[in-house]
Length: 396
Image (cartoon, rainbow, N blue to C red; front, side, top):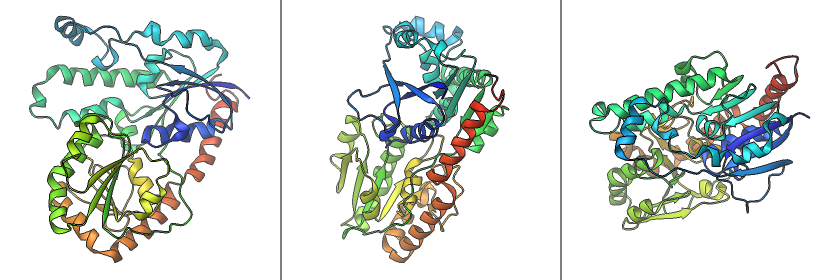
């Protein structure tokens, strides 16, 4: 089989966070088509090896010392790179790439624009890139929620730089993927293909709700309070949770996923709220919870937390932004609620066991039909074989 270099982040086969689930989806399919060599940022060398054969090269991120305010202002005005791509010691970062001898790999598959840039492969003649969520759209969503964002010209100029950078990178790639149709429409580039996120779905679900009402929130909470997950979570705990506690005093709220010290300090004084941290097997969590919430206010991409909850038959209450890009029917597969109605929606579903059961059955059925990892895997294998082995498909 042909050798292929994959550039990504973390330990994808352990999954958990959405960015790991998506990478593993691609890696499982690529492993059937090519000889894989993985270059992974933030890789835990003590992690278990994947079940598929591959070589792994860890890669670290190094930064230069901080710039002065005058230097920052100058670069904000005149550098073609957005501020998020600056101040990296690329020579140190890319040393492992130099040692690999990239000429050995006729194709490079890279995850996200930022890791493609840091690895130094933006000019590779046969680059396939999974954009996942366009970075400029993801960051911009949080930016415009801030007060007086219209007057922050430096950030607005940065978003334009980021858009130009991402579009240019995609244009140069032989093929690129995003997870949402709306992102493909926004970018409007001919070599862009929509590959939706999928999850492993049990063929049947066996729910055993806890005695006390239990709400769960699943996601990466390791960022600051303004990250997409944490900003929604803070809003829920400040605006929704007190009313739920008042009307359903024995209700519990569990947070599942990596969590920052900032968020730990925030939740410590709150009644009946606990963090379980990272959990290897989420199936028992979903099967025993009465409700999963995804109070997302901004961001892009498919919410893996919603797909996983539905796959395990756990009812979900989310915002319109949370279920964006997933063709769900409100009040049949999911409860979609605007902020002003979110509290009422949660309380109503906690009081209604029949509706919870109906949502559980309908959500699981929807996932089996539309977001099955098993079905997507076969499509991806066929796609990669077309790209890599049919006569001249990407001019290799």
